[in-house]
Image (cartoon, rainbow, N blue to C red; front, top):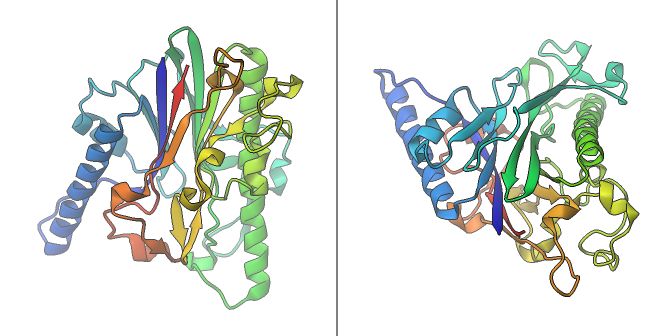
Length: 332
């Protein structure tokens, strides 16, 4: 039985108001082009479940309608951040449990240590994930699969009054440290939900997918894996052990190194968009060897990814997202 999932940061996918002036008309035209691009890409790749990042309010419902509600009848949007950005999921398969929003830090990370810099420059604490994660559950034949999609805190640094740069190097270091700690805290929260699922439902499959805002070898990405060892690039992968019950396997490692990227910043390729799975998504074949999914980052579908800078304002008029869709196709 085949089962496929996709994650895609669709970059600033916000509904626009069609006004009477030329600028509003141009914005509406660009939005329609982007909607067409997303629709055509999803139809071509045809995943069973799609996880999105950087959605605006009601944008997912419009995309569902454009795709055809009968094609992806199951939908859930996550909780927005203060700019209205959220994650969401479309699924060909019905949700077999109510969707769950993961928006609050529940520990063990000390909540009073997760700091944010407000617009005024004042320092504040937060008890919330920047962009809430979402958990949905589907049945793939006899296997129930829980999928958690997230959009972890970006490496983009925001300084007082909305600036994206500073000449104060002490401030830069402090803001970077706060951003790193928040991304790590969000990864811990997703990992805690993963651990609960693997513990309470040991016969179910779990997939974590989304924009991790760091590479597959980064410490924050490693937090999601669970017990160390036995990853797909190690000799222990085909030798199951007791740690597998709590382990996630990063399928990004199956992409050849030269193609292992989903975004380019300042000319440097990065594998930010990742799909991690538990052992039940890797069933053994007749020889007892784990079957590997087919995994690809579809950079060519969007005519090649543009290299982006640290200033997101330069991307507001872009039609093609700055992230490639990444798809994993499992044989269950």
